[in-house]
Image (cartoon, rainbow, N blue to C red):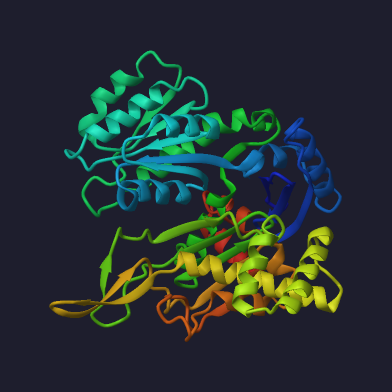
Length: 461
């Protein structure tokens, strides 16, 4: 008898269901149904499971064991508050992105009343409050804690991950409020040293225990095993597994994963990113080994105007050609699918490659020659990804593209931009079956099987 395991992704548009046969280490089926997050999320789940049952012999026990991730209702929306933008605020942002969050706002230094009102209007799921190294500056984090404690509407959950010396005073500020306040270790306990894992863990715990309830997903807990993490976090878990491997199953090594969607383009790198240029010094915060960035202005459907503008600058289009190009973009906007027309296909390929290129340009590190009175020095900021040998493409605009290799070429190092440290000679793969989220979820219980499964279905191009 087969060991069938089901994995669910509650998306804002579609609810996806994947069934694996763990005995055969094979994909049995992947289906999707329209999400019903605005009414009763269980309705979309039931439809997806019904569709799954048409091809897979799914039993009640299989459904009860199903595990899910979610990006429904806008995903996990977070605001990060810190002391200095380049340090504690950035450290908080890295922690939140690594936990699968969508950053809807960042604030630094002492918040103003206008910023307090702006934060309340954002109504994030979680506010991450950082600031000061342990034993360092307390004034700013205490001021910002006071501003947060005054917000009885708009801020329900606060994670405090700043100067531990301020904790008792922060507890006193939040005493008597209706806010749920969680304390964890400082995200930057010493200058230049990050501690992201404790913050990630608290974010995930909050997501599972409280945020999913607020988004209506609690109604499906009677049907399935539960929601384990945000969808981007599941994809990051899959990327780490593919790179690092599992016991008895070697990985592919350091990699870059680009997920192009209709609203965002997400980039994941699992790489140390140490300098390869001789003598280069690293500036800024250390980069996390497993890093995620989200570009909310590079979705292929919701951000066509932005991508069209980037294309016009990159191609140096003259007025007549620009008008023709913009006309094609308008047709793509109304089509909202993979075009059949040759001209529209070419236009979509151009925009898709630009989405990949721009997102990876922002994600990758840079190197710059700095001239000082002591001589010339190379300074690197961010990760050096030039030696990364694997690039994985995901998302409809890549997977269903007429030429996915051309789209993913946007992730590759360019001689005319040598300061951007992108992969120089990678192999290209596709998540052609859309199962990365399921692999990331399975990896939590059986990483070796999860790795062997994804290796079967990653399509090299």
